[in-house]
Amino acid sequence: MNQNDIEDLAHRVASAALEFAPSHRPTPRQVADAASILRDMIRAAELHGVKFAHFDGIGDFPRMAIQLVQHRDESR
Image 1 (spheres, rainbow, N blue to C red):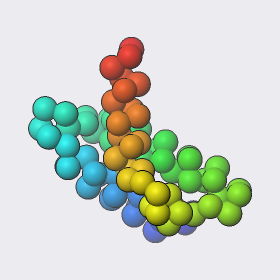
Image 2 (image 1 turned 135 degrees about the vertical axis):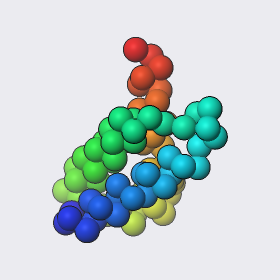
Image 3 (image 1 turned 120 degrees about the vertical axis):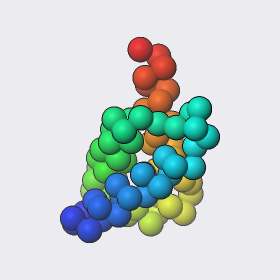
Image 4 (image 1 turned 180 degrees about the horizontal axis):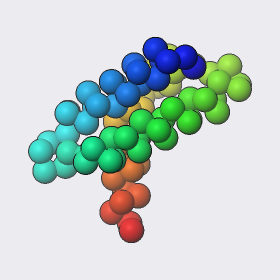
């Protein structure tokens, strides 16, 4: 994963955040956490030959990462 990939990932998470209804829109911290989680997931999967394009092929992972962080925060 290079710098361009990381910037693209951050942009995609930020774009996904804007798709949420205003009452459910993630905070800036949640967006940053979601981007970090997704980056780390992809880095771990790369050890097995899986790229972000593979993630894209099965789901909206930027949105799911945001939902994961929101769920984490709700359970605190």
